Image (cartoon, rainbow, N blue to C red; front, side, top):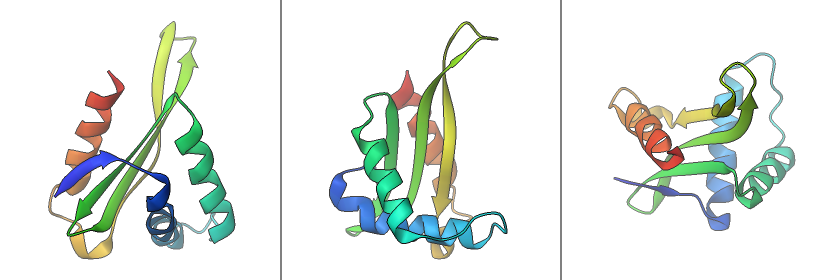
Length: 107
């Protein structure tokens, strides 16, 4: 298992993961073009973190973090927007490892 920063070539797999995430939410509509565009924008933002988990050349999980200013904290904070682990890989601690990596990457 490898946790790494996402690349442009990972977008189709990440869009598929977002489809899996949005399928469990009644409020979201799966639109591959919109999700693909959103991922491209995130990857272009210098203050965002997009991490993926790769096993055997397959992207099986992802997390996105966006930098915001908190007036309460008087500093920058990270907004965790999307975290998804593919169904077949859940309950193995992968999401927890991904969030820890996101936190380390943010510091």
